[in-house]
Length: 285
Ligand SMILES: [Zn+2]
Image (cartoon, rainbow, N blue to C red):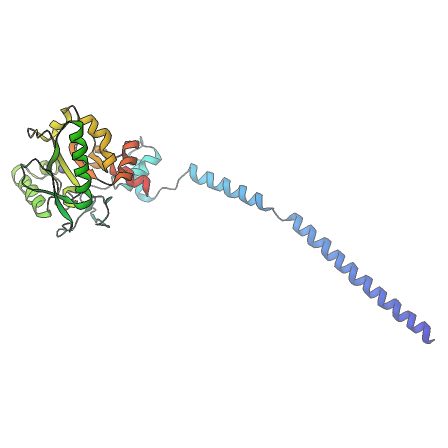
């Protein structure tokens, strides 16, 4: 009797083990089946790629862009976004914002971004000038670069110098106010920038003379070495700030004589792409 009971106990024990193993096996199979039904990772990536393509094909326009696109149905979406980024959907001088980084050589001063009335760069030094406006000053980095360009010009066989460079807020205020008094505001706005919006206040701009021809600022355009200057000034960090074909972006009529220092890297990119400063800053953001 004792032996039989022991065998029964062993049997029950074995049946228990088998039962546990069977449950474990079923659970494993169930888990595997569940895993196989789950989407794999590459599928998720493809989904995200499709989403991204859809997004690129149809950019979401903000309210200002939508309004501008409606008013200018001839413009591409990319052009609409670019022009709204430049604030061209807003009337000049109606939405002024302060220039953020006064130390930056890339600061943007125009009819949407202006300089404080008490701003005068602290590192102004004199540069080679035609003498017609007395001593002419630029910020040190720009002045050093300008002197290198003056030297390179001499090696090309012509004299380059500055007619005018840094101009104070007060000077521009007088210029603009006299214009308004004598010719009316519309005329004054076409010929002079309002105080704070003149790039000359940055100390990074210079109106040039070639071979001391002081007849007219635009006379440089007819100088035989002007094309050399246009091709090489970026190597010294300078750009033509108001090119003939960029008035729609700069809102300033072409100025063949007005150079702006931005540094060699930016000047080279601007030269290679035939951009104006506004476009460079748009693509660099
Ligand atoms: Zn100028």
